[in-house]
Image 1 (tube, rainbow, N blue to C red):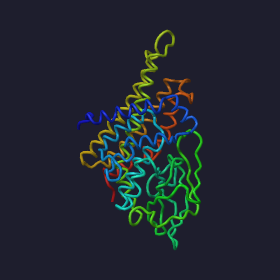
Image 2 (cartoon, one colour):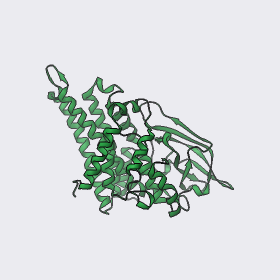
Image 3 (spheres, one colour):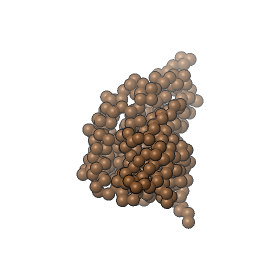
Image 4 (cartoon, rainbow, N blue to C red):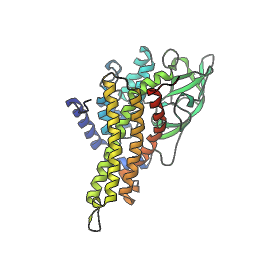
Length: 373
């Protein structure tokens, strides 16, 4: 397993790093997170111009047809920002779901504007905030003479306020889970942002929303199996984003231990401070190697589903714990919303349960390794 970056990947990394430095300076980023203004249209537009939306898709749909590792290298640098907005939710996750689920005609309609940033398609999958899986889909889809009527509530939709369309999972009258795309401006849709120690999250309510039959993905609404195939490609990219964020937390914290002087010496000389930095590095390394082994498996054509779930569990836990240990080093200064640590902290808590908690993905990993009858 060779985890060294190629020359092209190094160039991707440098371009992404320059983008973060120019477009997401720390003083501006902290204000976006403090004010819950994480959807910045200019970032999505520029990402589309560079070619970061739908990166892994074939070129005929507007993608760049790069490998999973190429894409992850870019998103690792974006995580160091952390760059906010629907670059992952729309540009990677929704793009992969549409590509896996749709027929050729739908792909040609939905994917090119998504890759250009002209449309933002945000997945709204489960109806139970702390649960993941098709059993957590409770939104109902009822057949009518002209199509369908949808009723339900998605309590935890990441980047909901940025959406021009929602990619929803719903349950038919026969009990089957299907997927469909709905215009975010459709009558009956209500978006309510969450407050508290979360960011970019809202509740989306669907109250008697009319849905044309043509909005179903594929010929019959696709299936949960199709979603899993898309997640196999998308989740490692999210993990790479969390790895980059954890790396930034580690770097700024270590630099602080060298410059913060207490009792006449840098705090980095105190053993307990050193212990906290070591803890951050352990969680960071676990997340990095689990993520990049998964990417290597994907790009090598090897079975990777168990590794995908393992990486998601470790990266989400790693980012969450890295911010906790960093706060022990930063103490008071790190609790100011004008400080980068608070942006990382609220994002780490949000991503911890996004698309499944670490505990849920560990169970899915075991199910993949040891299938049950």
